[in-house]
Structures are given as structure tokens and as C-alpha cells.
Image (cartoon, rainbow, N blue to C red; front, top):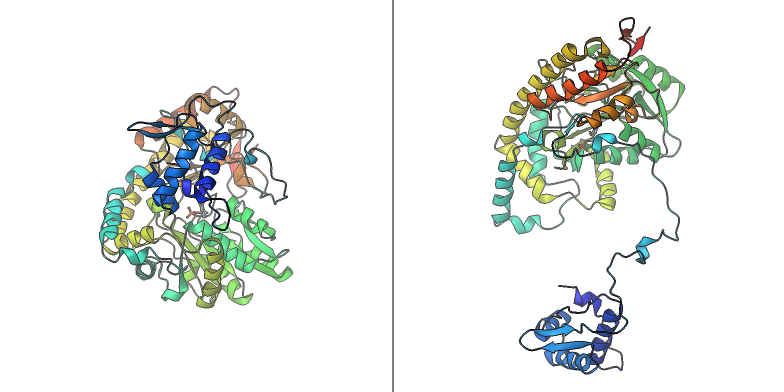
Length: 508
Ligand SMILES: Cc1ncc(COP(=O)(O)O)c(C=O)c1O
């Protein structure tokens, strides 16, 4: 039913009788085409309830409309907008003449972005090589739904329907403390922890609290493009530091700290994005020293910590001796599914208290029901079991993809098996440009990015993240098989070309 309470506005101070105001408003709505010929109007009882008026007033309004032939009274059916009205062209809410069909008269900012072919959804029957997303077919959705239902049915649910704290559900924060202590060796209290909508919100909030226009921010080269865009949007000047097979170059970081007043360093030490490399233990120790020496604010992004395949995970900088300078962000979106928007930020209490106020300005608080559901699944061990199970599965898939790439693409590609995460960083021989491969692959039922967005602000290379976690055995086989066919059909061969691991590029 149309929102008559909003459509029919009554002026109680007007001298015009109420029933006439209503009748005139109906005429207006019919003329504007909002109420179309043949539409059955609500009964006088229902409309009286909606408008909080006496039913007799509505009856009088309808009688007025009948007498003017705008509506017809149909026995046993009700009041209907007359179907033979003169010169009325019904219009929908979204016609070209809609006020929103035109551009606004006011000016507004423009937000830089990158073109993301990876976000396309593949039509049925087609495959998509994504950036490194989880396999949502494996997500513990049954447990999630069951737990959500139990919470909704519990007597305490009405408490969850209020706003609550912007730092997130207390139950979830309690659970997270246990989880982060056990898995990452963090030593924190509840006021060091804030629940966010994914790691991305945490990155934005932390950066917005630190960065002022013109500030220097150090990032890897290449780096996670949405972090770069976010810092630049806030006015940062990015200082790019090379990333090699041992992770970000910490000597270069130190040189920059000597030269500039650096506001912040952004790092992804566990599995750097996009190249997936892990920061070596030696560099990690050196970086902690730099952080303490220069009192450098560090934003440590550990968005895919839960997936590591070679022995124990590397502990984050946040669990080391950093003198309170590391803001640590993580996420459950990669373990549960990308649209379960729950992440977290760990930081000194005073910083988090202010950050919570900033969050309140854009999002009063997160989603209570999801946060409580996650808390319950952490408490009963579902998340731990799921992470173990999917970790084993993704480990197998990483190995399978590495095997397939070697077997089917051989020296046309170069890669190092990542110690964890959900993607392999694959560099193609320049004679097989990804921009061309992606076009040919699409025609063969495989969506694959041309890879340009990974090099936002840096020198482009012929490389991409090949997400393996969301593709099963058969799908991986098919995807690499298509790439094999495409590359075989290319002219020339790549025998004289060699890969320089240090520089992460091909050389003749
Ligand atoms: C390096 C990196 N950080 C943060 C994020 C954001 O993750 P979330 O989905 O938790 O917001 C992503 C997303 O892919 C990412 O790749």
C-alpha cells in the first residue's frame, strides 16, 4: 500500500475542512499520476487509522471525490480511482522527468578510485579468478543462522535493538580478547578494542584520526590500492617504499624517517597486498626498533591472518615491543564471507576513545545481531573449527594451483608459493600481456583481471593475484586449462627470457 500518511499532509490550522483537504490532496495525487486509474483506495477505516482521523471524515472525503467523478464506488470492493479520467498521463516515480533524473545544481567532491574488473560477478557457468576471496560455499552459514535465530528468540533480544556503544558489542569484545590473545599473542583489555565493519572501516578511521592534509605516509610499492586511495583522499602525500621477497624494505623506511616528518606507516607484514610476501623475522625486529626510535605511528593491516599454511603464523608487530605505536586491524570477512562486515581495531585506549567518536559520526554503531552471533560462534568453538577446516582446504588448493601453474603454464609465469592467504601473486612473461589474456579468457568463460589496479601509483607490471581459495579442484583445473590454451595460441616463445626475483620482473 502507498504511504498515505506521508502523501496526505493535513493542516489542522487551515480554515478548510479536513475532509476537503483530504479530497483535494487525492485529486492532486490522481492528477500527478501517483494514483493511477483503476487503483483501489484503502477502506475508510484503514485510512482513518493511518491518518489518525475520524472515519466519518474519510467517508466525507470519498463522497466528495465520488461526486466530482474522480473515483468510483464499487459495491463490495471499495473506492477505485476512476478509469476514464480525462487527460491524465500516469507517471511512475522514476520517469526521465524525475527531479533525480537531472544532475544536481550543487557542486560536490570527486573520489579517486581504480577500475576493478575483479568485482564482476561471473554469469552462470563462467569462472572468475578473484583477488583472494574465501569459498562462501564452505562458510558456517547454518550455524550462523541457527545462532542468530536463538538470539532473536531470547528474552534479552530487545536490549540489542537499542544503539549500544560505537566500540561494538561487549560480548564480542570479550570473546575477541580471548581469541586475539590465543592466536596473536596480543596483550589487551576491552578498551583497547573496537569492532568495525570490516578491516576497511578500521583503516579509514585510524587514518582519518592521524592524517592531516600534506602529511607524509609511507606505504609499500605496490600497495593495497584501497589503502592508498584512502590516505590520499585524506590529504596524505604517499612515500612509496619497495617491497621484495622479504617484505617491505625497512632500511628505506628508516631513511625516510630521517629525512621527513613521517606521520604514519601502513604495512601488511603477514601477507603483503598484493604480492603476498611475508616480512622476514630480521626485518620485523629492525622495524620494531625503527618504530620505537622514531615514535612512528604504524597501521598494521592483518586482514587475512587466519590463513597460514607453513607451520605457525608470524606474530604481528602489535604483539611485539612497539611502545604503543601500532594500530592493529583485522577482519572476519575473509573467514566468514565478504558481506559479513565485521572487523576490529586494536589500539591504545585514549586513541580508540576518540576514534569511536569519529565512527559515531558516520555509523552510530555496528550491527548488534551479527556481532552477538559472531560472539556466540567464537564462544562455542564454531569459528575455530571452521578456520581449521577451511585452512586445510585452502592449503590443498594453494598447492594444487601452484602445481597446475607449473605444469600447464611453465616458464610463461613466475610465482613464489605464499606462506598463507588466499591468492598467489603470478607474474606473466611480458609476451603474454594480461590485458590481452583477460579479453580472450572472457570469451572462453573465464573472468580474469588485467591486473592494472594493483599498480595504482607505481610502475605497472604484468601480474595479478590469482585467488585460489574460492575455486575447487575442478574449477582450478578448468581455469588454468583455459589460460594454458590461450598462451599456447600466442605467437613466439619465452625461452630466452629470465625472471629476476630480486626485482620481481622479467629480463631478456
Ligand atoms: C590488504 C587488505 N586490507 C583490508 C581489506 C579490507 O577487508 P574487509 O573486507 O575486512 O574490509 C582488504 C580486502 O580485500 C585487503 O585486501
